[in-house]
Amino acid sequence: MQQTSWDLERDLEALRREFPVLKGKTYLISNSLGAVPRNVHRELGNYYELWATEGVSAWRMEWWDLSREIGNLIGEMIGAEKDAISMMTHATQAHWTALSTAFRLQRAERREIIMTDQDFPSTIYAVSQIAESMGWRINMVTSSGQPGIPVESILSRISSRTLFVATSHVYFKSAYIQDVGRIAEEARRVGAMTIIDGYHAPGTIPIDVDRLGVDFYVGGCLKWLCGGPGNAFLYVNPAAASRLKPALTGWLAHRLPFGFSPRMEFTEKSYRFMSGTPPIACLYAARPGLEIIRNIGEDQIRAKSLRMTDSIMEHAHSRGFDVLTPGRKEKRGGAVSLGIPHAFQVKQALDDQGIIVDFRKGRKNERDVIRIGPHFYTDPNEIVILFETLDDIYKAGFFRKYPQKVTHVT
Picture (cartoon, rainbow, N blue to C red):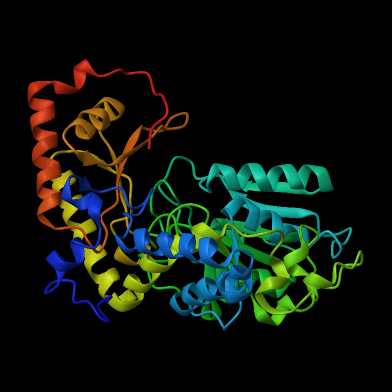
């Protein structure tokens, strides 16, 4: 039976046993892919058994409401009302769905979308392509090579021409926390909407979407929520949800999906923003991680995260590495980005030592970085191991035997 509560100091060893990858790896890459809980194996077995024994009746017995169940587990963590979360396959789909609500609402004077060059590229691609097809303009706020973007730089762009502000809660490369509450407030004041990419936030920093006042909040279980791929989500502010009709839609969003009417009539609540048949196996995989995190609590997770990122930054500064993540706790997410010499080669050398971090190629005039993402299951001694191993790699020149050309990396 799953433990009902966890103390991160007292129960660390028992908690670590819930994540099999920790047996053989120093796993410091939860900002890219959270460790899989061992009970995912059980959940996927349950998925198979229900399908094997009940066949199509599995829809009636559990599958049909599974998206709502998992969405409400997520909603509890981010301060959302019940049934305000729609499960999506990926965050790009969630952005498409949110943007498509404006296809019928657009007005001639509102044809501008504000983004930043620190937003995740897939989001920029998706929003830009839709904007181009609709004749909307992207108003891109640039960072000038800094880890984050001052909120004032975004606020100064919001005007009566703004249709959406589509930016990030936590920037993926630097873990800089943006003040999305102020952005949402200013957008509301001028009649614009907000789509906030929160993929790097839930599970590592406390979230209250009601307090933030955003219109749309996009996230996923892949990283800090330890739920694997295929489990993105879209929160829609209930105050706006009933009047919005997404153009990107499908049969699950219909009021009577089994009526098979050729005329679309939108249902209410979270299924209003869904489209086709959901990836049921992925939803089963999401449940164990969400339950563990709920039983730890966001305050414990955030406190430990800050202690560990403090430790990483102290070790990095003592070695003269460039720290590209904010030192201020209120501006720092769950990961730390370091500009280090020979970053790609060093990342490969760490892989061979069983120490897993990730690498990001710098853009023009930016350094290549490694990102270090500890989580609630990290043993603080693993951070010491990481830096002692880095010392050995540099001292012995181990990195020189690895390719310099950047290929596919995580």
